[in-house]
Image (tube, rainbow, N blue to C red; front, side, top):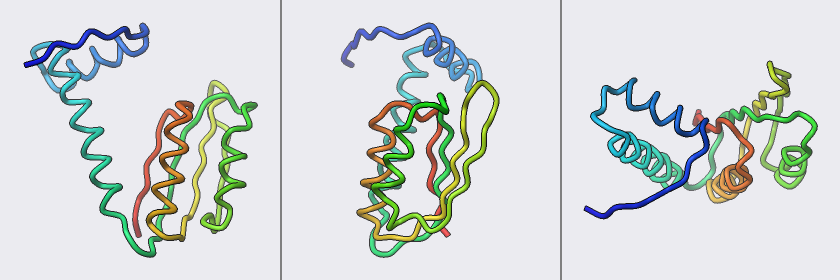
Length: 127
């Protein structure tokens, strides 16, 4: 088995310890492997989305003043049929969008949202 050395912020270390405790894992390495498996499952799920799709895209993001989400929504306005924006605690925001588009367009949109690294949560729920 290979060894990888990584640097993590205190928040990520706390999250890693929470994963370890929640799943009663032996060590942080098992928690990292579990997190990687979960990310791979999510990638596989997105890869199965083909053809015309409809569903709800749920995003929780921080920093209400940062315009990155508005820019993404403008770019993908053809795919967004309805959207709801709500302010949460600590300047976070909830974005709920009803999406109707081709699967490739949805994958592109979700990938762009995640690549910004500013979303705390991103989930697409198919109809």
